[in-house]
Length: 124
Image 1 (cartoon, rainbow, N blue to C red):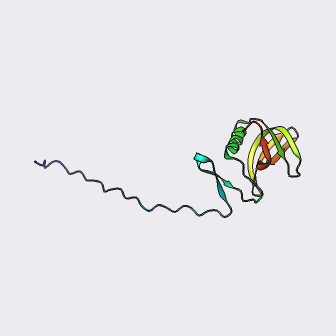
Image 2 (cartoon, rainbow, N blue to C red):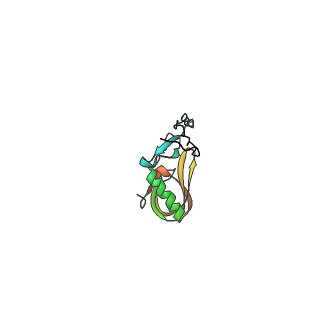
Image 3 (cartoon, rainbow, N blue to C red):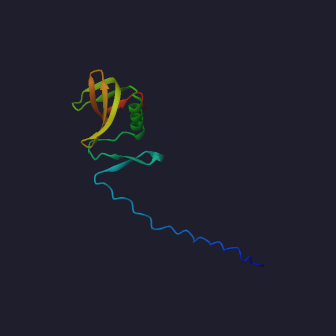
């Protein structure tokens, strides 16, 4: 075997050695995560003892209804325990007092409905 004096030797790259894996960020006190099956962690869980988070799929469909300005038929119970049914125009989703709320326009005006008291009929 002969070697060509004009040919330069190709340097072999060193083998890949991954560095240390960075530690995950510390958890925020009082906050959890909802897991939506294969989609993984999404929104932070409110830390209210009496608030029950709604399913991530329903939350996502509310977000889409807000973006597309699509009215939805809903039933809900207000803070006083009164039952309501109406066709709503969803405007926004908010977190207040460690619970999540839908801001919506009704025939009677704008309302904030706590999500765990909302029963949307056409989002299921």
